[in-house]
Length: 259
Image 1: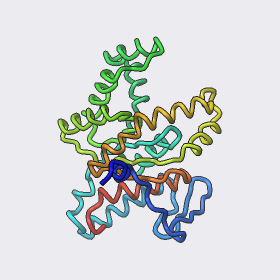
Image 2 (image 1 turned 90 degrees about the vertical axis):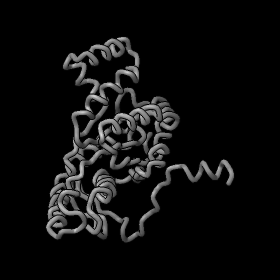
Image 3 (image 1 turned 135 degrees about the horizontal axis):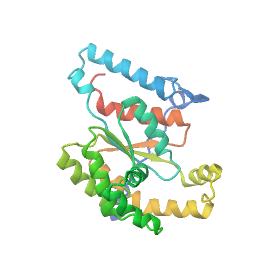
Image 4 (image 1 turned 45 degrees about the horizontal axis):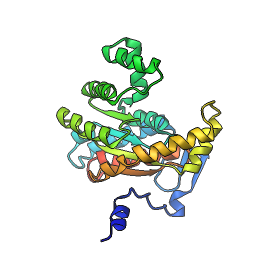
């Protein structure tokens, strides 16, 4: 086997396109109908339907029963800027009731509360510098220690951070459920972010952020692919359509066999 073929086999693959009858969707407002088994629902409706399905599954005695349905969700959302990680995290939270942990929000919270780590981070922030990994990793470790389930958004951003997270979760006895890789073409990302109209969303800055993502964060997907945790998700559709794709793929890892 050649080196190039090995690299190709290790690269995260986009899921195959669904048949037309399954992939066509009608979008109206925040609702979506995907032909076949996909529900027409917004995030709150998805949550109601998911709870009802879980109760029915447990009542039927399928698989190991109700205990397996309460398996904590511990997942990571990976994707380029503009892929909708924060938005999808909120939808997943509505369905699985797992806390959404954004490293940006976590940093701001520590600073606001005046914790020791927050004070250390503020020195770098006020100087316009990036907060060192050493501080960010301690913040994430402290947060994860107090959560049974979680949706990590914006972390890990590098293979070194991913390896650190592996060690932390192993010590805590909290194995990951899955890592959802939100895949969006660069040109769509540029278009999305430019349309937001923010002052710092110039095409030059957006493409630089994408370059950093491809060089530093994208290799993390290979790390989790080796652990059979990676769930590739096409994220170029509407918000509810992508949300449905993520939720159904993650739910298939949590539900009892046969449900």
